[in-house]
Length: 542
Ligand code: NA7
Image (cartoon, rainbow, N blue to C red):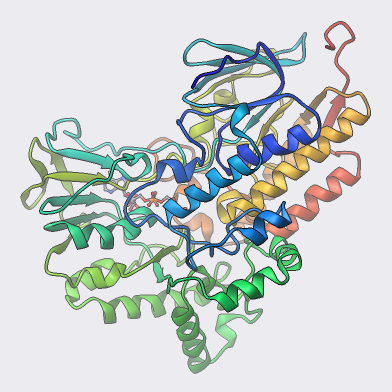
């Protein structure tokens, strides 16, 4: 059912994923009027759109959940160690119902532009249907991996069969039974989808440009004892998780990989491989800092791939060699490499035989023409900035966000952009965001913004804006920290490298979730250092 958008609000929130929903809950707590504008017809954000077969979170379910409400975290029961998309979407819907959020969400409402009216100190937000709402604050909760992207492959519109993108998967079940399916891409989405599609389809042909490192998930039904272990002490475990580098509680070995002996390293990697999941990267503290250390872990995984995949040529093609392990987002899979041993699965190595064109009936590479019934694009997203830049933001003095970010995103703490007062970005570029457990980072941002708004309320202040100087310092600090790691050496979507023409800037903040939180808290304690706080002119105050 559609409801009318009020003409005036305290806050507009864009996006009804976990970030937007929690923000709405907290703004209500401050007594502010707020609405969420959401393009989809349901809540869940990422978990609403990414319904592809095998979609699953790579953070353990006991940790990929809200911590703000003790009853919620105690009562909700996850069925698996790593939750699959349908269960996470059920959880998002449960949160929406439990906190009665839906009455303030406008579904199927896409934001087209947002303009800051300097005289009034308010944002004018316009939807693609031409509805207009004026709000003091505007909070972007649009997600970091939400602008799905099709590749620039010739003939892409000519194909007459079915096409899918993992990030826009249809809500009705897609049936691949008896079909010849092409999958383009081998990132996290493809690595999760391929084994499941292969069980159903007649044939699966995977078109790989760059192989990725993937660690087995060792997913399993939730272990009752493990669940107890968390829930008996959820509060203090969550506090610990918040101070970890990635916002995920797992053990990080403080040793350097190169200081361990070959035998010790082997044992440590074997143990972590057997446990499964991204905790593999905690085997040594310096895997993302030191190339020699990283090489030991990368070689371990390559040797596993060579053992698992029977055809030597396929194994070699699947073994990543051109980026250090972890510098492109590490994948977590269930039977990914083993799937290539199935008779109905084949890998096409695009480094040897690139795609020339998509045709009406299939895909032509430099070596052959192959016919398909369906093509699955698992080709990723315009990460971190894509969803924001789809909206035409006009800040102070008519400045456009697209201009300010022409050479890459600039922000203060990933929370605000100088020149755009009262606009906030939840898990924006410049914050740990995609390098962290997103829910931990979302809660931290929402709580921090709530603290700031409450500080302003108490002092009769209506305007907050990051200063240019604070922003410059933060951007420089972010670059400096990133350059101490191996991350910038990889052509990853963290660097914008997957989008032709996108500036090559390391977008997330890699200083660590715990250190970042401390910095944000210090800044708040010093009266929001680096932010200019003001009261609107009396005439405009309303
Ligand atoms: P990713 O990780 O960006 O993967 C996209 C894949 O698509 C990757 O293997 C790309 O190869 C491939 N790709 C992109 N364009 C092309 C063209 N033109 N031809 C062939 N192959 C192409 O996206 P995902 O959805 O898997 O994962 C995104 C994040 O979502 C993930 O990290 C999790 O956080 C969840 P390339 O590497 O560019 O050679």
